[in-house]
Image (cartoon, rainbow, N blue to C red):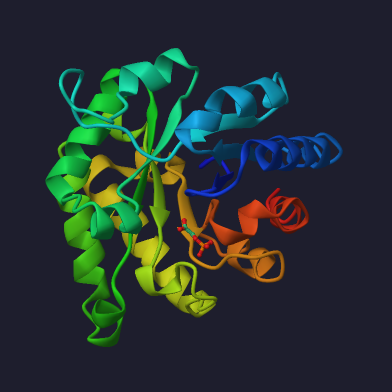
Length: 253
Ligand code: PGA
């Protein structure tokens, strides 16, 4: 069965002292309430080492990154490769977040290349997909997500797709406090799982983790995580506050 996973996405926030405090508080909270779900803290590149040291050997907690470059290496000023991340002990990287698609013009093709780079380094892509408000309103949201998955994921073979964590994040729900109705979340997660089932078969589709992201907080997490096809969450704003984040973590068994 799919692993339950909670991912913190700190985005471009926090100063070094705040990172130490937040990470320590999260680790302390998790150590007091050990459960089997996996927790991945996706921190800015500069803080990977600090977070990793503080996490140390804490069970089921890992450090992750928020992006990587799609090329193996070379003259790409300012970029960070998968190999570099791997050598720092990072195994999980968020790919195709809507903020990267929108502000840094990442296309489905670039996202696919990043995913292949990660897989060839034996790392796990956290693949984000999700529709715009326009696509939600004109009811083309299934087609929107369908095309994102076809273009960036469906050239992976069965072994490769098994390394991927999927995060469904409707763009209009990210950082807005607006959350889709529970039945809308479940409907999309079911659609994604069925799509994976049709291409890769039952075992792979049952094992892949499909997370929900977009304005998850300690009050709405329980209902969202109880949906049959939801295996956890990708948390932005609420992951910057240890109490709020731990409140979410506790809802995922
Ligand atoms: P949010 O962000 O939880 O602040 O809505 C989610 C995300 O961007 O992954």
